[in-house]
Length: 371
Image (cartoon, rainbow, N blue to C red; front, side, top):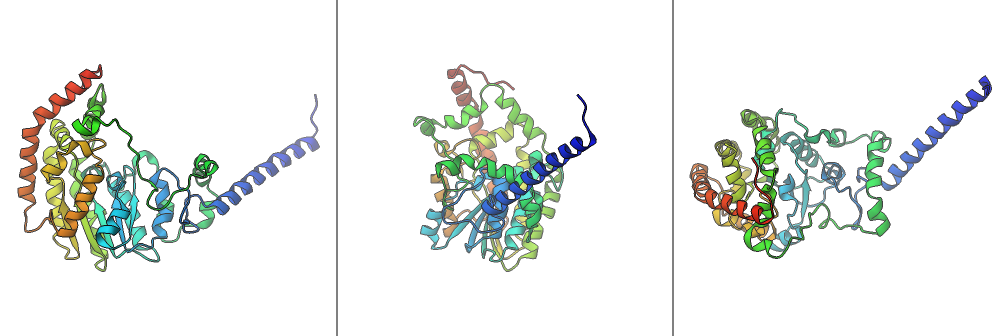
């Protein structure tokens, strides 16, 4: 079968025309539906990308609340309704799942350059965020840096297949009409067995089988030598450049089990050193305060309120908000050393029972803990 030059040219024109048509169709959908809310502020009920790393840029640019809570997934379930009930102030929640210190800095800087930046920022400072290798480290190679700026390029946004892919991810929710309010978006859902809430087994099950070995290996892969540089590059500039903003930073209430894991991995001293460095840095800024919930032993020992070793539930979150209102847990006058020693003693005393209970749980589930 022979092909003429004319038919081949017609074929190329057809293919090119089809590509241009599909591209323009994609651009039209991106512009019309604006899946990441970069072009327009979201409605009272709207659709969101479930991956917060992509879902946040548009939201921070359209901030309206006077208060904002920011950080990694440790602030994921912060309750805006409870916060307003306790403080009388509206709160927006901005988080980066697994966000490194650099990624959080980019998000917070973008928030502070918004048309209406918040007056108060509550920052959950997760120590492990500042242990990432590299001062501009991006986790999982997924972070839309070009959107974390005061004026993202609308053309680049609507012409991006990544934007269209995020729109495609929303199709099931859009078809079902499952829109969300600002209070609902990006919150986790936990439907564990009732018995788990009594004995902390929601945490212990994350150590069964080979999971313990993987967790310890991950802690061993961090670069603890950079923690001071991470704080200097990715946290201090935010406090330094924005004296007009009130900052409330807090060390999160990781569960006692998580701190026992730090000890088992041989990095508890590094975590405690980070806490000391952070307290010393914040002390330089009168418009910033630091709260330490990690050394609140009753709080971190309430294992039934934890979804895993790191993420706490509503009872803990409400206790934290109440404590910040009453200035309980405020780090001042160098008392971080006392709090570090209190935490170290609790870990040393509690670790044997913690790992005994974890082994019993895993054995009952037909698994052994492998390291």
